[in-house]
Image (tube, rainbow, N blue to C red; front, side):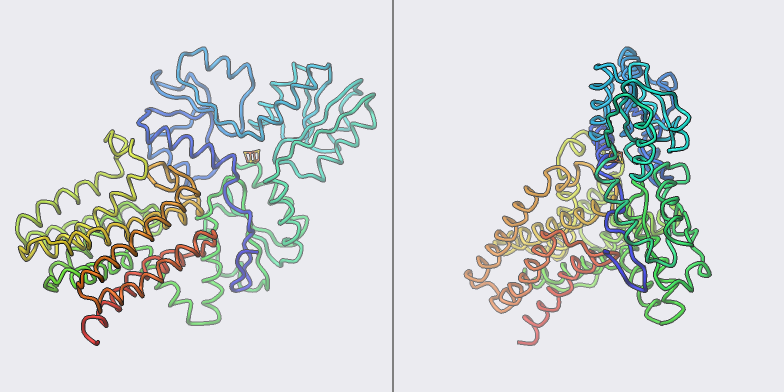
Length: 562
Ligand code: SF4
């Protein structure tokens, strides 16, 4: 169980299955590499939010390759796989073909192919007409049949030699029941359980939890076969089951009385949609019983609307102003706050989802950009000219695949975020007063850059966990967990070295000593995330951006109170 607030339990294995995740990653990599247009044979997954998101990135689902208008585009075979004949057909079209078939589906292809080559017939226990089953049939050498269950298996003819396999998302009980029926009327019968491990695990946790729950919510697309199957399984274990596609479908009266609510999801449901459903259920239940619901809702608004990150940047600006002995001017703090608010609201997918309608979030970003410009033009050319440049780069970021360097540079998002924050928090306060850059400023720049880069990388780890769509522009996605952990360790050492250097230079030793104290918090947070304990909801942002609030407090104490 990963969550039990308000009697709400969320299945630990819910979220994208590895096959779906891999296929989406592959497509996003192509998009980031500027390959256009990208066509997927059938929707990558049956989830409206994700499909809309992919569509917005120019990734279109088509039913047949003939629908691909631009023959210079890329055709992607989704996780379900296709028949070998179909694969040959599309490869003969001359378009670039990317095979994103799940390795576990490929394993099933291989099992079927091996037995078919030895003269075995094949019976697939699954849904006739489902894309994966159609693909599996293609490997049976024309001697394949499909049965949905034992009853349908009973209607099949006798077999001399038969291999019984399962659709990878089949329920184990149904598979074995049907296989036994076939075995009884076959000369030789091989039973090859091709149900994939992630499905088995999902089924195990569903059986374990659904039977002790009073109400089960299954989250997933209406057209998703595995979500429908999961829903059916839950219906056999719990008297009350609801299948929803999004949080908006949950009504207060549905979830008011059950003591224990179990939330699970199909393999094509992103974690962030599951989290939204869980958060709505919990909030509606809390509203019944306690006022803290209001505080939680307000906190979610502060985080998702980018207000928290915006004030975090003001805090960092304050720390760097103190570190550089610059003048604390409200104008430069406003510039930092508005700048980070605008670009976070504009670029962070979670914020977009939070505002639900793109109109509101777009309006927030436009107002923010106007405020940034107003704040920048109060200062000299050394402030407003780079502000314009960084703002333009940040606003152009969603269109990065048109800018070769950005799409080619692994970790570009984290590097640019760190540069942007550094500009407004470290460089601008000093440039605004026309002061010269000394050694301490260079060290402050390094300090700010490394802190924000670490923040951005850690937030990406959380975003990946929530199944947000990340490409190689994220350092973590580009280099994987081991390299990311090694890089973060080096950065933490470098941050310690920067502070130690300032201390031994005799530069504001009291302030630096307090910042070293705050540095312990950053180390603690990094160690916490190394262990992959990703907090739910808004916990990740609260902890990570909380470091800037703490550093500002320590900087205040170190410069004013001691
Ligand atoms: S359900 Fe299993 S086999 Fe199917 S795509 Fe996911 S991991 Fe692969």
